[in-house]
Length: 193
Image (cartoon, rainbow, N blue to C red; front, side, top):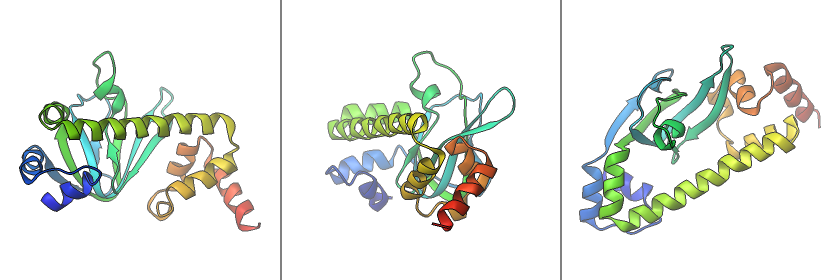
């Protein structure tokens, strides 16, 4: 566990005692393909770090259509951020599904908040990660507003180079905000270039 934690927090130097404090607060869990880490309308109290595997966060609208919000792969953090950080405390709005067998570390947000007080370096690390995630989400919104479907697909395969073989076409299409037919057309167009 110590080596995994050192890998996660590789941008900061933690003492053996601090690593032990963190280790006492995390739980390692294994997920099989199609297993859910979280379902909608549940209380959210944990943050998760993906050691290996691939997970997908998605939302189902009132008409039953899935909208993929995020793929999370090795080294990424995942949760339902609306429920976890939202101003009004509410239950989860999204599902987090394992799409490639995964090993995940789970820690309650309260425990993590306490550790951030006890270990100030951890707090700075967390702020940097949140800033980076916020920038990535904002970049994704801007790309969805300004880029063509083909440009969004090309950006997707550059961001997630090894993911296509692990996810279904409709997951990718949902993430890009296009139909599976449009995705097929874009792939054919790229293959013919």
